[in-house]
Image 1: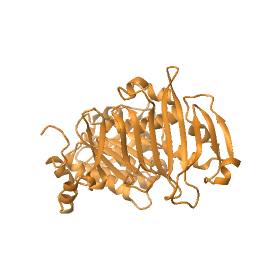
Image 2: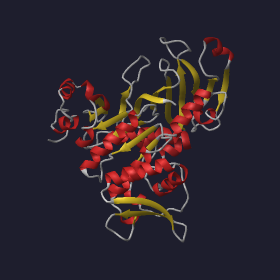
Image 3: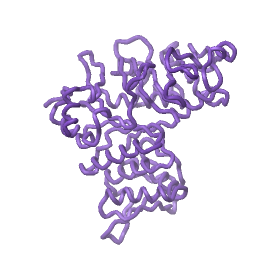
Image 4: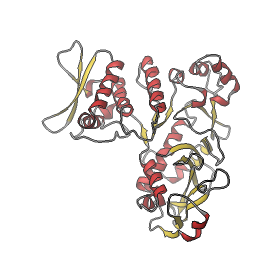
Length: 408
């Protein structure tokens, strides 16, 4: 399973030239399994998460559809104001060999007034090399170029095994098509990895809806199908279903069990049985915090979890003790031996940050030019020194040791 090492973003809203983690081919500080973005309102935290969503949406539905989502409003609203070049993403992955990361480059611009892929490449070092430049195994300009088959890049194969490629639709990614072909196993892995990215924008009212009954494998972005996924766990993964119940009972005092039920009109109801009450409650009357903890329990107990999970402000609607508990649970999930999952969280809660280490936290700030920059807490000498002395990281942030530029 691939792992995200770092990402560089250019010309995407406030991210005029933004990087996170390892963004050169030389060995660097890769993103940890659990990373957290903090900073004032409007500093760009949500934009970073949306950038990941944009790449995933480009893969699944094409760049024009990704640009025109209502939350984005079209290409012109996405490109950094004052810039004329393409929106650029350079993503570093660890694949089968840690010494030979794969670098995916994607440039999106307007062609004839329509968003299109203008450049797309994949690069990797030759097999056995730990130094030197990476070689292309996909190189497309304007939808045309070359692709190299196989598991590794070898100089002898560069001329022999290359194939000319021309895509019919310029708003589709090359990895979308080529990632379905068995002769390109590395592209298949990258496509599959990005396809399984999950970004959580949990909406309690969406979770209170009554969807049609029927088990579903994956939680959607708003949590509207949490009952359907719970139904899937109840049928297919009874041990994990029990784990979800245990997490909820531990977090929510008095909660005895949750049972998915089918109504007479084939709607799915979630029945909550609580101590001290003869009659059950249903999702329409449950608190925001209870529904949110249910959704996170579903994510954390998944036996085949998403490889990358982004969560925006998980503390909203949660009691302070639950924020601390959730931070610990996410950290435990990400650091579990053999776990393929990486988690990227944005937060305004010092209590959440208290559970983290300086190498897991990035402070986002806007410069005088209005562009977002990120600074890792571990690269702030005073912060690192004070945490080495045992002071909690969130408390240092709250006490303004981060100098985040927010009003005091």
